[in-house]
Length: 218
Image (cartoon, rainbow, N blue to C red):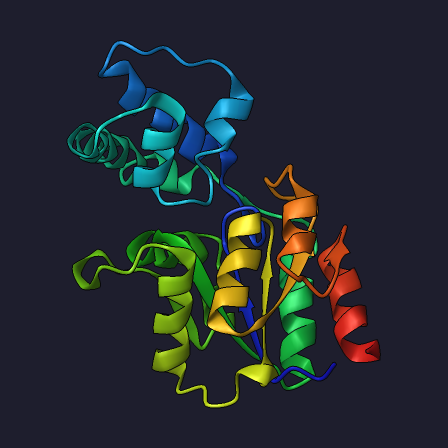
């Protein structure tokens, strides 16, 4: 399956951002007198838009969620953004894809500025043609909105030549809505792989090196 353009989710796919995100969520919740210690609950904030997560997990109103997001960013943009690490094999896989002539970009629901900072901090930003994320001034925050924005900015005409690699059902569902293929990985933050399968992923793999082999062999 010789895809010419490969899009990567960031959180849970390229980068383990668990520490920075969960600590920043805890910081925001403490402003409301909520002292959350359950890591499964906190982990569900990684990936989806924060507005959706605060409303889903704690029943916050839109206004209260906006306030919580501001508190989150207060810590995250100063400290949390740097509390992360690359997953194993990431850089070697990016090199392998480039050597095979693939065009690489990022399509993340995380704020685009944060994506850029993280990938520059981890010294892999140069592998990507575009580091795309949520652009709040344009109202792009959901996965489908980010994907449509990234595809437009890349000037993609033939979406059959594009595949998104991601770790959650939000990636799989967003890709389906955007008309691009998706491949899932298991080492990230997803716990519902059936939802990914139901969204029509091409496959779910335990490592990025397996994805490289799959895209070359099929």
